[in-house]
Image (cartoon, rainbow, N blue to C red):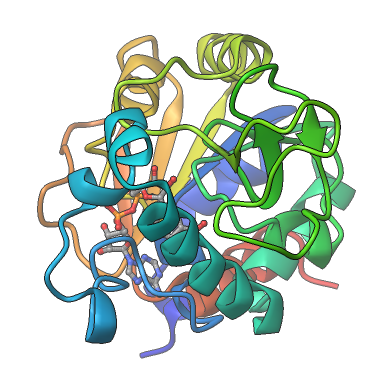
Length: 249
Ligand code: NAD
């Protein structure tokens, strides 16, 4: 059975009729682009580290070179990756729905490279760096030591991502909360829905009557309920099938 055949017609109809759709994506949508999820990335040279050893302000203060080098290796992998059919299906979705709010927990910039406009990044972007003292964003860090110095003030640069224990960017979080409070359909794609506050948004939307479509390779660890529908399978297959079923051309 194809992913399209497995889609619930009521879910397809809800999507087709929606004027406001929120999409919340996580690491799973980029898995088919060859970008490992956070925990899968801690292999090889990095097998002896925990996420908490690398993705916290304390870790950066303690061992800035180790943290910078880990992010540099992920940045290179992300630069080599290409957006996949899942990212492209979301570009297509925006052609049909009057208002799509795309919110991502990913830091890889692949939605933008696929062609999505107005992407709200909840956790920043690994391709950017910023001054650890003044916050000035630097797109291309100068070559040099790990981490390189800020070209303006000389303080160490850090990745422009949100680390554990840090505050999310206010505008992105406000946009996400507003979309969750007003959308008719919410697509939750490739996220384990464990990292708060993003994790709670789909269930908030379901509680006030929105249709929630969870696109994931597993339903394990996700919530269940009358307004929550599970479209099981890889995002690169399920999302194009969903868009094609709702708007056959
Ligand atoms: P996660 O690693 O906790 O969960 C990934 C989810 O994707 C799982 O539920 C898994 O079952 C699902 N999945 C795996 N392959 C899939 C596929 N092909 N199609 C659909 N679903 C698939 O990721 P998370 O929920 O995003 O949380 C981890 C945090 O780590 C995020 O906050 C994010 O900032 C960061 N992160 C980002 C990237 C990236 O930018 N690509 C990669 C790794 C981690």
